[in-house]
Each structure stands twice: as structure tokens, then as C-alpha cells.
Amino acid sequence: MRASTFVYPWDVIGDPGAADRIAGLGVQQVTLASAYHSTRALTPRHPGHRVVTARHAAVLYPPDERRWAGRALRPYTQDWAGAEDAYGEAARALRAAGLEVHSWVVLAHNSRLGDEHPRVSVRNAYGDRYPWAPCVAQPEVREYLVTLAAEAAVRPGTGTEGTELESCGWYGLAHLHAHDKTGGVPLPGAAQYLMSLCFCPACEAGYAGLGADPEELRGAVRGALAPVWAGGWSPGPDEWADVEKLLGADLAGLTMAWRGSVARDLQRAAVEAVRAAAAPGFQVLLHADPHAHRCGANAGVDPEWVLGHADGLVLPGADLVAACVPYARPGTVLAANFPVVAGMGGSPGTLAADAARARAAGATELRLYHAGLASAGDLAAVRAFFRLRGWGGREGGGQPAAGATDPHTTTGRKGHPDRNHDGPGAPH
Image 1: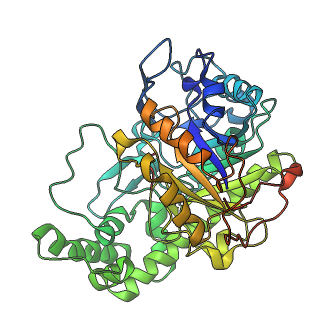
Image 2: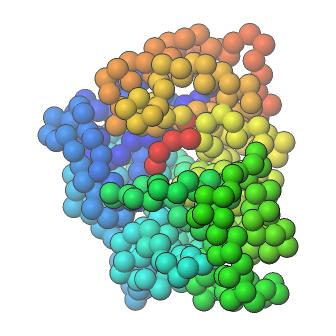
């Protein structure tokens, strides 16, 4: 089973042993950040530092000034990743170690953009803005994200062979915010959806175009949330059914019709822009959740629709894979993403069982989050996993276990026969 691990450029730059150490895990591929949100990251093996603070969302390469000239919304640069073209330098080092490199592009998640351009942020039914969440219904935001997707995904001269687009859709309330204090009232999935509905002018116009009065809809959303704030509501087993119970089926369907059309428009445009900028055979995957109403890093998608456009999906864990299998075509990638950093809630010691469950559900690949953040013990567990017969890592080399089949197995692009052979949710 083909596997990739996520890596930041600063994990590699300045550490002469990093690329070989990552290759020694047994993975065939690295998914390397080229556009990323703000974070504070541990670097437990780097000879020059132990903590990297990315102060704001930024691209990890020099942006093309001609592409962005005259635009109010444009990517920010960085000074913390070890080089101006941190992505390019790290990609070349990883390729020299024998690893295939794909870019990792974070799109609709950018707190600095919302701080500096508050008009572009999602605005909830109470009028609160979410600076970290640019509203993807706004034409200016969509144009920015599509342009960023093409530039950050396809890095000329780096040997990058594909990309994974994160947060290619709606972002909402849920956010790993600094000193967060939003846990006082439980907000299950249905409440998260209602708190993530946007009422910026573009979204209000969208609701109106579908026959709703935006002010009445805003009031209905606030009314639907009233029992949540009062503590008098308990979620059921079906998240979308809960939305319909709280808001009413007609209004719930109308909001989803608007948001679904906006998300599909962005996803199609982003994929097309990447393909137009890339060489033939460049792989385009989306980090996704097959529940179309969900928001965040794994943006909600309609799996049947999206798999007609993208080459595949990266899904959090094993449980969501099966919902996408019926819509897979020959060569479709369905990658199960597992966190392997025990200190961040991952479970590297159960990777074999987790991977087997993912393969049984129909996963064709694995993603492991995150080689740069993991402890020495975490990495040892990953190496041990790939030494097991049947998982086909660089060192394991085995064939799939007896009886295991993969309906999506096919000769991959550019002569990679293991591109889609069978044998990580993760934080972002």
C-alpha cells in the first residue's frame, strides 16, 4: 500500500540527515507544505532549533509578483522556514533521498487575511466575523484561492509530481485558536453547521436568489441555536437530520443548496487551475469529508461529483473511506489519513490494525501525519509497521496480504506501477 507522510520544509532545511531519515521510514512519498496557515511546531531532531513559530499564513516559496500585481488579496511571505524558497530547497533534498514529492496547499484558512481584509471573512448569524475563515462565496476570495492553488501546487523546477489541496471549501467556527475559550457549551456537528453559516453580503444574496429572506433566515438560525445555548438539546445519530430538526428541513436544504453550489464551483475551478498550470499526469487530490455540509481542513464534498474532477481524496481515518468507494474510477486515490504523533492524539502503535481497517474499507493509500512532529518512538513504530509483510513500504517490500484486493489498482501515471495499489482524522 502506497504511503506518504506530511512534512514542513523547516523539518528538512538545515538538517543534513532529515531527508534520509524520512526515506528510512518506509514511505514512498512526502506531502510537503508549500502554503500553510499559522502554527507553532516542534522540531525534535533538528540540529539548529526545537520550535518554529509561523506567525501567520504564508507561502513557503517566493510568489510570482506578476501574477499578484494589483490584487488586494495576495499571499504573504515568510521569514521562519530557513530559506526564501523553503519549499524548493526541501523538495530537492527529499527527491535526492529517493522520495516522490507532492505539494500540500492550505487554501481557505488564513487569519491574517481576515484581520487585514475583514470584509472577506465568514460572518455568522449573530454578526460575528471569523477572521481565519475567508468566505468562499465572495468572488474576490474565490479568485484569490484559485490563483493560489495553481501557484502553490505546481512549483517549477522542484520535481513536484502532484498536490493535495486542504480546506478547499467552506471553513467555519471550528478552529484551533490561540488560548481558545469556546468549549463552555458543547457544539456537536449540527450546531457547528449552524454557527458556520455565513451572512456576508454575497451569501445573503445567494440565499435570496433561492427564495429566502436573509433576515428571516438569520433569525431562524438564531432561534434554532437557542436550545443549544440553553443546554436543552441533545444530538442524535445523524448529524444532518439534527440540522433539519433544529432549522427545519426546507431552510436547511436551502442553505445546503447554496453552500454546496459554492463549494463545488471552487473545487472545480481549483482543480482546473492546477491542471492548466501543471504538466500532464500531475496528480490533484483534495483533503475532504464526504459529508458535504461539513467545514474545515477536510472540507465537505459530494463524493460522486468531486471524483469526477479530482484524482482522489485524502480522508480523515478509515471510517469515511467506504462512502467514497462507490464513486471511484480506475486509478482513483482514496487515501486514509492517520495521525502518528502520540503526543497529539495519534496512535502509531496501532497503525497496522488501522491500516488494515482502511484497506478493508477500500483505501488505496495511506497518509501519515506527521514525520517532522513525531517523537523518536513514534517514528520507530512507523518503521516497524512498514517492515510488516503486506504493506509494501520502501523497506518492507512485501506484497498485499493473501486475499486482499484493491478495486482501484491500476498502473499509475509516469510509469509508477504502485501508484494506486492497496497495501491518516489528523490535525492540520
